[in-house]
Image (cartoon, rainbow, N blue to C red; front, side, top):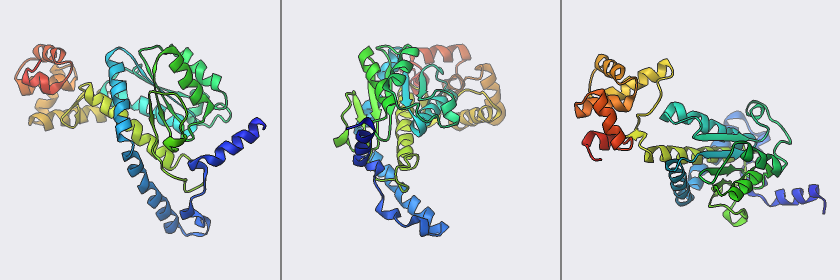
Length: 307
């Protein structure tokens, strides 16, 4: 059997490549009927992800352990999956004040593929392996492959190379666990079913992947002390919106007014955590920073003096 015929036969078996019975006549529907069909299918995504929560929690623990050991998280994907990984990685530094090198998104075709499809870039396993080597992935790191089909060569190559190096590996796919045959530490397999438009995995599959990555990095940042109560207290004041959000967070947590929040943030060097501890523990900036250091960055423990 030729490689092309083998791929054809493989694609036929994938749930995400099957036809969706609910949308067989979508081309004959009016606009409200079309969007209702799409919406009805989208409703299934969160429930599919719910079934995978134990595996997502395992992934979180692996990522947190890596971060605490000086490791990094790399996403590896192609097309929609790659862009979702790049997006998640890019959003963490402004949201949580994390080092930009801490979470990286690798995409088949490189940076140009983020903005324009680079067809064919995903077809070779060695391309994924080469990117892992180029980014000096080591045994402390975690590599998370993202592929709706679970077969994308670029992603498979990246994960295989990472495992060979000794890095921990995670894989996110939207095809059934029963079809998963790649050696990884944790597989996350929300079964979203056939897409509304056959094979258009930017739809339900992409939504599921986004939900999973959100959970992994958000949970990891919480467990690293970058959240107090349910507020992001390690955000970076890199634009006017974030400056005002920082003041609002300080005001909400401590009850001070706008001017006082602005003044304390100035004394704290713009660091929300420090400002919150200063006010809640009635200490100066130097003492607040010392408390945060002793508390491993956890605001609640720094306020309570629970080191």
